[in-house]
Length: 374
Image: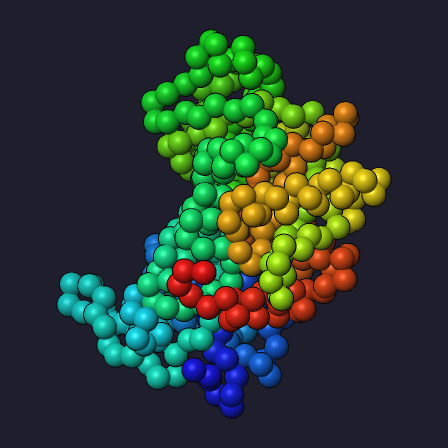
């Protein structure tokens, strides 16, 4: 189907129930501003922190934070909708409060038929395969990886397992489920310092650097505020390098961007939430100052990781580059930060694909791929 005046109807979905709600809103603001309205009729759909879906005005200013506050989708800001998992009618459906506060279907809105979805969601309940499954059930094309790759990349344990199975290098780590802590043998194996993080989180929320074992339990408790499953990773001494990956429009192997480097001078001793979003102590070198041969190895590793997880559309692959020139894979992000100043768009801009062109390419990739098995 096509929307008004032959334009495709594009739903941009953002916010969500994860701790990265605000970051998703900031990313969506950039996408909203970049979409070509001559090609697409845009339907902004914000998911409030409590999980309610709302159609909001097509205006990036709606997602501007107030003062020092980060933006948030507020339940009173739009009209409630749901997306039925029905491939026979790809329409958002309005809901209204019934007696007792239970949402009731009020009827399909013909002007809210959807052709393609850009889920600008970070973290659980969005980037982890959940919304991808709903969109597959609804028969809607969408930007980014499918159910399996989204879920596998979000869970750092399974991501590392799959990367290692593909013969790609990952650092030493341990997995702690609810109630577990590190054994003495694991402490000796990992050494100090270690990084303790939620297994299924992002934006460095809940991550701690531990330089003394006496601080381990506090770090685990902090991580478990976001996720009952926790990873403890051995520190990899080296440079933090990132690389963007995109599916090729014409098929074939994925394309990779020029790598970038994160240089952090943070009191936390690593690239934590403050260093990412509210500090002047971080320098982002785009592109990274790397010899051509090393940059090629980083790009090859990023493309291989993308394929090992069966990713689609886009991903940002984070690696460590050791003093010996070894490339060690750290994380694969299937929906990286997407503001114009975020590293993923900046790496592609340095590689010749500016922000509006990047947004357009991702939408076109989604439309060409369609939904269902492929």
